[in-house]
Length: 251
Image 1 (cartoon, one colour):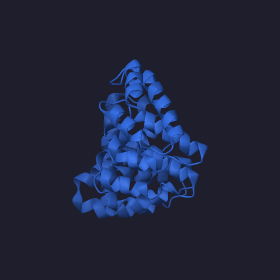
Image 2 (tube, one colour):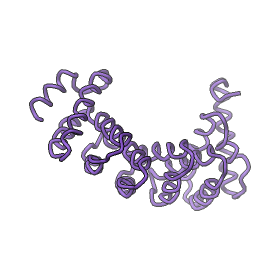
Image 3 (tube, helix red, strand yellow):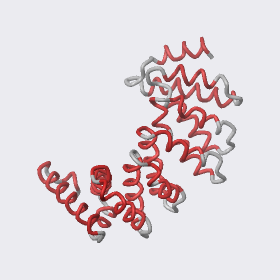
């Protein structure tokens, strides 16, 4: 039975059971249920397991080294869901101690399976929001990687930090302005749109785009920004009309 097919009471009991089992296995170093939870077909079982692993790491300093050893062991699994869950657990840890999981993130970035690489994107998003300095330094290393998918994934991964602190990621995005790969360019334009509709963000993004050498890309980004203000009109600080007026006045 799937996680959300259970009643609320049964879900609470299941989560408590999973937490006890995970703590026990981490303490003993003997894996049994944790790999099974990480490999479960139900997304919410996997999520419960990796969130629990992250919470245990943050709450139990004495278990931190054991958790890191187990995660490195789990990442060698042939099951892509186990590797995906391992990266997601590492992302929870990286919000506190990025250096402890940086090697795992790099391995995940080059994993053969897309769900593992997508887990890296998601992890960079949450780590970039909570622990930006080492996360963005890590991302910067791969902005000009020969693999176009790595460049695209890194561009996408730093987006969430940019929604609240666009000034932190704009220097990194600017390095991609002449990327010739369509998927990277499209992701760059998308991210510029996504970081421009919150309070104070449009002003910061527009001021930065004025300085970009690739003004053709900047123009495409401005079109996306205007479009985003309509698509996300319930969440945007400015209306689309106000965004257009601001761009026309200041760009």
